[in-house]
Length: 316
Image 1: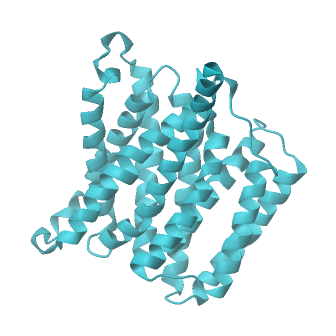
Image 2: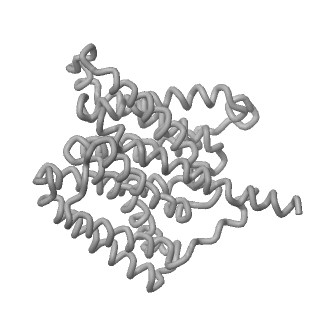
């Protein structure tokens, strides 16, 4: 009996960690929008991930992973994690925050978390790492149709126009970056602990963001930045960045990228609720239809009508 209970606890823990990640990410969209309304998008990106990098470095220093000298990672491990950070932190955030400066947070909270698993699944099928079942092909087609409807609706939605459409396209590109980051996760974690890998990736991306955003940062009137903006900066740096990224990498390590991607479907629910509650944002009718079709297609493409089995080695 005790053995059974332990196994069950171990089996559900990765999904609880991933669910926490998605709650943090979902709330991070509206919080980041508040900051982008007062600061240049590149500066917001470096504040978020620079703060997250510092928090992770402190955590690594204090953890057993950081103290275990005999488990020090090699230069190859560092290079893999740093390379993942270039894609998943630097490029992703430049595109994401640029999009957030043009389009509402509610659009990003739908496009990024829903399209990321769709693109992840599409790549796995193209690379023949997973089977192209009829359900998956139908789901990808449905998802593509939903995305087209959503983007068409962007121009006619309240507060829409060319700027909103451009922002939504940037969100789509950032979703592609995150899909690549997810697929790299398992390779990055070979021979390196999740905390160390997350820290290396975040630090490398944050350094590049700092270099890129330096000219814009010089022009900011820092003394005029409101206090509530700084509170949001602290939140997104610690919660949706440092803590969430660490939990996400631990989840990928435990259940694999395909199963981890399924949990992304919690993000639009949380993100839409936060955007409506705190920012007063909403979809147009066409966008709402597109979002629904996109979500159905994404769920079908990723799950094939069922929940993927947990990897047998997840409990080890």
